[in-house]
Length: 211
Image (spheres, helix red, strand yellow):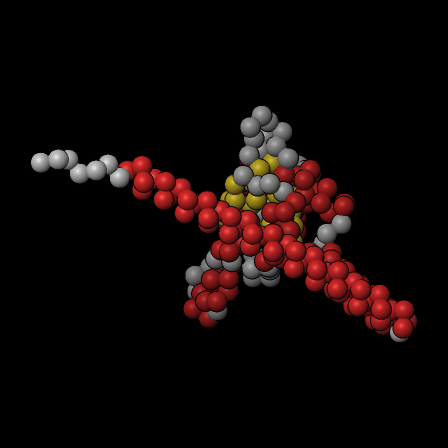
């Protein structure tokens, strides 16, 4: 009985031709999308120029819309998060390790008893440390402010903010390339959890999508 004909080459050739057709289609689709996008931009510019020449007030309106659209988020970010070159410089200076292969650690609850001691230990070891604390008034905030002064003497900067402030956390992670997060922020006490359990949830579980 004769062996069945070898069709492997035919199958490979058909697969290759199918791949080439898909590749050409993808390239054509990509080129068409770029063409339509550029054509849309060109038409929009022509329309804006036409209305500007015939209606000068239209130009003022466009400028106002552009200013509000592009600069409002920036202004909000600077006011809400702190921002600014000086602020960013403080963050980077505090978080820069002083030893080879040192860690860059974000310490949450850094103004607390445990957080402040851990921050000092990490800094003494040569790691970069940046603190985050909301300085709430569950107990006397003066204690936390005093700890912050102590940490500042050791070149540890503490950002005053909340764990659930997603724009703030995004800003911190944009400015500083953290290698580790030491999450020590938590609501102290047990009895108060019966009266206000949500405060414990908010202080212990930040928005996980940020990380």
